Amino acid sequence: MPFFLIPVMMGTTLTGSAATTAIMADLAITTMAVGGGLQYMGQKEQAKAESSMYKHNALVEERNADYARAADRENQLARRKQMRQVLSAQRAAYGKSGVQMVGSPIEMQLQTLSDFEVDIAKESWDSEIGARRMESSAAIETMKAKQSRKAGKFAAGNALFGGAAQMASFGVNYKLAQG
Image (cartoon, rainbow, N blue to C red; front, side, top):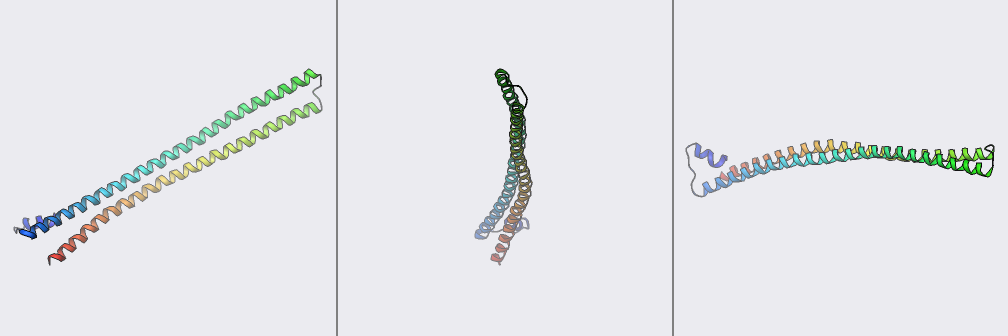
């Protein structure tokens, strides 16, 4: 509180409207200092919260990619089991009808096997593309987390220096008004 306390500390006293004006000036500067400090702290906390959110999103995307790959592995196992069942059913039908497993029946089984493997490969590729998309999203979220921290530091510094500039401007205006 430089305007009221300094004259008092120097042995002079302010009276009347000069004292009231000095007290109001001191109060205004104190309020600006506290406001700037609170704004600084708020900006830092906002950046911290935003960064935490982005980090969380990155972890979720990484887990989703892992889950997608695990689901694909399970799907491949299930499709191969299904393929074995279809091939067994075909062999049983051929055996029941008395058809020998040579020529066309073998070619049919090979074609069935090939079709299943192509389908499994396509599904696996699609799953891998999805998993990679999730990993890319996780990397972007991680970058956003780092950027929000940096931006928060700049915003907090801006709030601090903005409050100091307001206080200095007020002080200069007060001094000019006093003559």
